[in-house]
Image 1: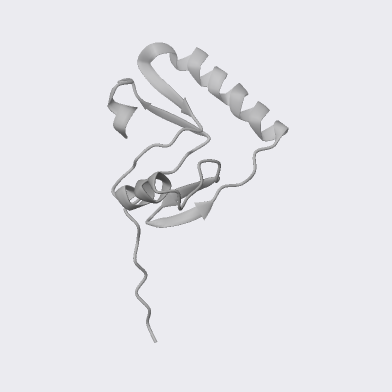
Image 2: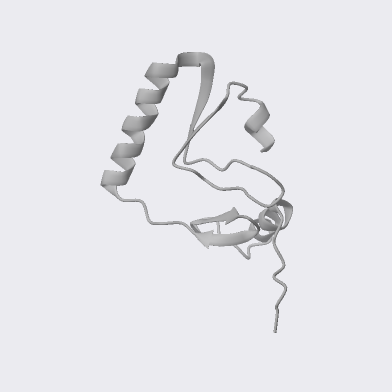
Length: 97
């Protein structure tokens, strides 16, 4: 028997957080319409992430925006929180993304 899986949109996902179904401290992200538990951060991972962030900032300067562990909307069904994202330099574009 085939089962249809209903994918959540970014709007649905955000609404789950707004009404308290997803707790504010819950470590989850939306990928391809599914909610995934994020891995727990540990000191070596955090230190490596910070080193990479600083290297990219020093190497690329003000030509791009470096986002570290922040949500970014990729499409209607994905809003991951990547360790590092190098994005177009337009900080105001990402305010509602």
